Amino acid sequence: MTLSAAVTLVEASIRNLGLDPDRARVAQEGGGARFALHRGSAEVFVVLAPPSEVDAVGTLRIVAPVIALPAAERRAALYEYLLRINAAEARGCAFALSGESVVVVHERSVRDLDASEVDAALRMVGAVADHFDDALAREFSAARARG
Image 1 (tube, helix red, strand yellow):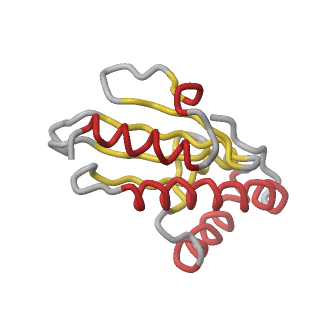
Image 2 (image 1 turned 45 degrees about the vertical axis):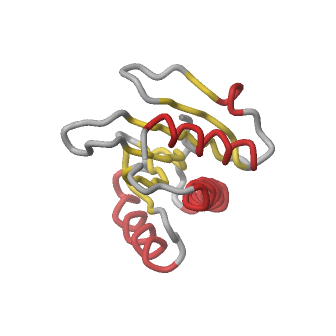
C-alpha cells in the first residue's frame, strides 16, 4: 500500500467517527500526514510517516498522551501497573513513555494495511487513553498529559 492510500484509509476512519478529517489535519513536516482528534477526554494523534531506512513503505503511528510522569517515588508502582494493563487489557496498543509522559501507542507499517485495522487501532487507542487518563492521574497523583 502506498502512503497516500494509507492517508485515504485514515481519513475514512476519522469520518467513521463522525469527524471531519480536514479539520483534524495538522501540519506535518517532512512528508506524510498528521491528524489530531479527541476521543472522550483524550487527545489522539495519528501520524503517517513517509518511507524511511527502517520501513520502505511508511508507518502508521497512533498515540494518545495520558499523564505526565508522577513523582520519582511513584514511578515503579506506575510502571508495574502499566505493564499489567498492557498484558491484560490493552489490545492492539500499549502504554509507553514518551519524554516525560505516559502515552498509549499503536504503530505498524502501512504495508497491507486495511480499513478495519485503522478503525480498530484508532478506536482502541482512544478508548484506552480515555478510560485510563483520569484514573491514572488520580491513583498516581499525576497531571493529565497534554499533546
